[in-house]
Amino acid sequence: MIVPGPAKLLRGLALAALVVAWAWFAHQGSAGAGNPDFSVALATAPVAVLFVILLWRVGNPLGSALGGLAMLGLLAWSWPALRQNIALLYYIQHLGTNLALAALFGHTLFGRHEALVTQFARMAHGGVVSAAQERYSRQVTIAWSIFFLANAAVSSVLFWLAAPAAWSLFANVLSTPLVAAMFVIEHLCRNHFLPPEDRSSVADTIRGYRAAMAARRQNTQARHP
Image (cartoon, rainbow, N blue to C red; front, side, top):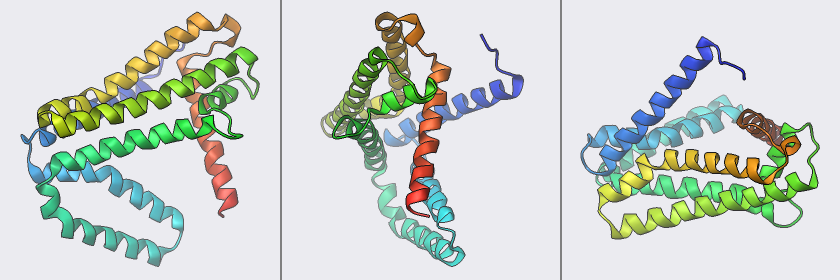
């Protein structure tokens, strides 16, 4: 068992604290108990950061500057409306994230694609997976697709039919623990259904995920230099 160093442990604790703080403030804002301006800023920050990263990758300083100004102008123009619809803003974010993740996993189950978790397993095992690993990893890909679709469905039902606080508790507070629970359940299933030589640790899975994402980025950059 590898014990993480102090720096890595501190980074992990800081990240965990950030996730908990974000969930709590998002819950407060969605339930109508937080500061409206802070809640809007918190909800739009991830999208703004992603947009800035995309602009940075364009490599055109003038285009990046104009795009950044356009983003700021759009935020300023829509800010009053966003302040009046904080719960809806978080709902769209939660729904979009889960549908995007469901699509990320699900689309690899059709056509000539290799199931996404199979790709992770292949990366974690030096490019070679057994027949048992391939069958199991495909089932896990299906499970994650269903999980994210179910999250989106439950979120929608609660948002439109339940009290804002009930929806926010599910979407903002329970989302991360539910994902963690899925990882734990999958780990237990892996140990039950796969022989020891075909099993991989959580660290192996994370390395496989990172390697797969890096390969995807390289392929994308090669197609669109």
